[in-house]
Image (cartoon, rainbow, N blue to C red; front, top):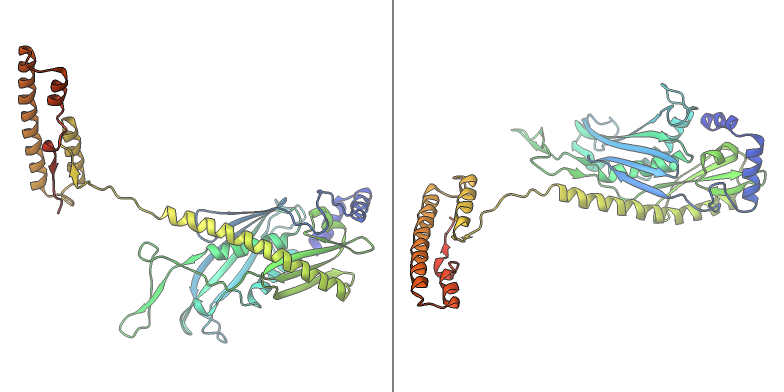
Length: 379
C-alpha cells in the first residue's frame, strides 16, 4: 500500500472533493459509471509467450519463459510456476528502483495465488523425468505505465502470455531410457501449456465516507479510496482467491455483491482473452506455412514461351527434372520453331498468289492449336 499512499500528495483537497462529489451522482472523472470496466486492449509479440495489455492508461507487458530444472523434494512429479514483477520509475515516480516495494510484492502474490491455488495450470504435465527434471515456467510482469488498477492488468497479461507460450518437446532415450532429448522447434512443433481455466482478478475500491463501490479504479481514485477488495474468479463463477487490503472493514453483504459483479466481469474478460489468443494462433499458423516453387506438368511450347519455360526448368535443377527431359524439351522447341518458320513461308507465298482469304490467313497463322501442344511427363 506504500505506492498508493505516496500518490496522495499529487491530489489537492479540491480534487479529492470533486471525485467524491461526482461519485455521489454516480459519475466518475473519466465518464464511466461506478460499475463500468475500462476498455481492454490485448496485443502479442512475434515470439510465443509475450503479451501486452492496455487497460485505460495502465500499460503492462508479460513474458513467459521455460527452463528445465530439478523439482522440489516434496513435489517431484510437478513443474514450477514462478512470477516476477518489475516496477519501473518511468511508469510512476513513486516506484523506487532496485528492491521491489510492498506494491510489487503484493501484485506478484495476488497473481500467483490466483493461478497456483486454483491449479489453473497443469503442473504435472510439466514433469519430464520424475525426481530429476521438470519445466520451470517463469512469468515476468513489467509495468510500463501506471494508470490505476495494476493488479487486473497484470493478471490479464499473465494469462494471455501463458496461453500463447510454447515449450520444446522432450523425449526419453538412451540405453537405460533416462536420457532426456530436447527437440528444437525446427524438428518438432513446440507444445502449449495445459490451462484448465482462467482465474481473472477484479478490483473493487471503496471511496468516500459512505464507502461508495467502484470497479476498476483509476490512478486518481486509488489515491482517495478508503479500502480495496480483489476477487479472483473464473468464467464458471468459482472463487479462486479473495483479498481485502487495508482500509476500513467491509460488511458481508458488500462482499457477496462484489463476488457477483466479479463473476459477470470475469465472463466478459475471458471471452476477450480467448478471442485475442485465437486470432494470434491463426496468425502464427499462417506464418509457419512454407511455399515451395512448383513445376507444371503440362508445358505449352509456343514461340518465346518455350524459352521462358526452359529457363524455369533449368533453374529448378536436376533435383526435379533430369538432364534428359531438359534436352528433350529443347529439341521439341527447335522442331516447333522450324515448323513455324516453314508455315510462315508458305503463308506468305499463298498470300502473294491471292489464293486465300483473310479468315483463312488468320486460321493458318494461329500456331497454338492442340496439334502443337507437347505433354511432358515429370517422373
